[in-house]
Image (cartoon, rainbow, N blue to C red; front, side):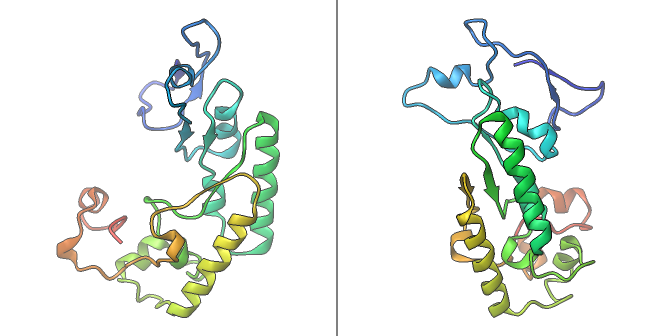
Length: 196
């Protein structure tokens, strides 16, 4: 697969996709996977904006791409409806099944994140050990169930992060001595990140 990026762009960031060809000369990003038995599916873990991400799932490209737009939408009906409508329209153009993601190893679990008041960043909440503000466990469980039911009712594929099926909240009060996430170390403790 050929990709193009501005000089100096690290390879881990989304790149505009140039012509990609399979062994038979046809455009394909999944060519090698099509020949494997049993068949394999390909999924992009891309945080690129929807307009850049949707083309990853054109025919002959990847089978699916995580829909992190849904994950990043706050818990409000208008925002969720707009994200769902945009996602369905973008994927309709490629013919791929939409995907839905509420939690991911790079973000605070949705059971906790969706209860944070406006203006509270997940990083600040984690650094407070989950005390600023404290979250009421019954409310966390209700919100987690509501969000999961909404996601499971949508057309397409659902991706569940480990523990999400149980409605697990983020464990924000882990002692510093057990934290191992490289982001915490690289930020000199300014970010707690993914250990909980």
